[in-house]
Image (cartoon, rainbow, N blue to C red; front, side):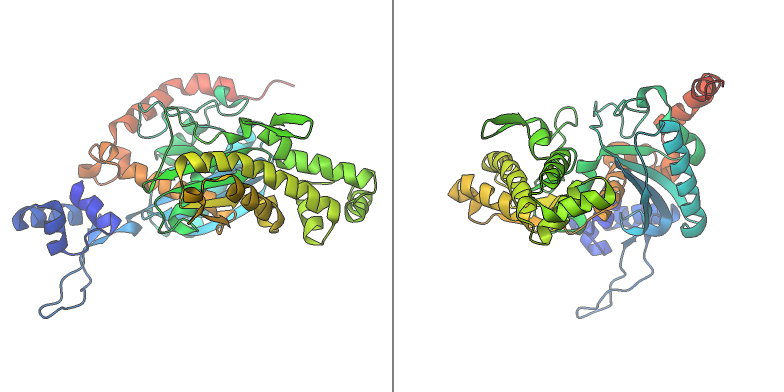
Length: 422
């Protein structure tokens, strides 16, 4: 396990480096590498650069040995993709969806998309894991390295075997994390967070949440409920409420509709006349076009968000703060207002070298982060020790027990998921 993870992480790329990092003897390293090669987990077919003698043979992790299916389930869209065992996203697909649909409809669509991806892009690679990003908090009781049952994260999920169906169809362990956690991981490993050890990631939408990276690792807290900053109370003149209610995209849309109705915003008034509604993205677009009322709405949202984030920054002293979400990424107004509030309320030692920037990942962040969640789960020592000698994670005893339980419960599950009689 130690040698595989040294190679997988890139900490050691030759036998000599493995011997040095692991403090194991040459014969032991050679024996373990032989075993890993037989299992198809490493490759030594390439030569490195010679430095005064024979060129060393490079030890590479066989990231194409298997693949990972990833998905993001958002309120209005679904994204799917496939990644290699190194967490590299190989393709992605996004489409409109409505998360208020019956969970069975969403599950069927996700299974259909996953099957399409495997047929078209897997190229004979074995499926090793599935990783899903969801809007709600996924509780972490620490009793299993992957999901053993469907968590009750959204209304109706507690009565539908979502995770169990995925395991039955694809025979692979399933990981599940909140969208803000997966987006944080994606930004850390492939976006603005590269090279940083401490990062605060803030997602602005209908819900406002934050992800925290400390010492290069995602911090999840006791129950996996880190970053619920949308529930923090804030005040604006004589009004008060939670940050989500006062600064989230729903409030931005409501205020946009109000200035459209009263004629304060000519651009939004015309948009309302033509389309019959005003969304938060419409407000952001109007602000980008110089509409004064829309600019004021986004500025106020940014200031309220910045006030809350400044308190967190003073406590955690991050190197970088990343702001994401469609209304935060469509123009600089919300970002500028948040920056002003954060810098203005932060201690000089906190703000001196602090970077506050927009996300670089967009809709890909959740998919990339989901892949990273699965790779870290697959190769965590507690997980790895139970499948490494079999060569693939399907041999893990908890997954075998889960499949046995699913088979036993199949008749009652079929009764539960059967549509009502008409």
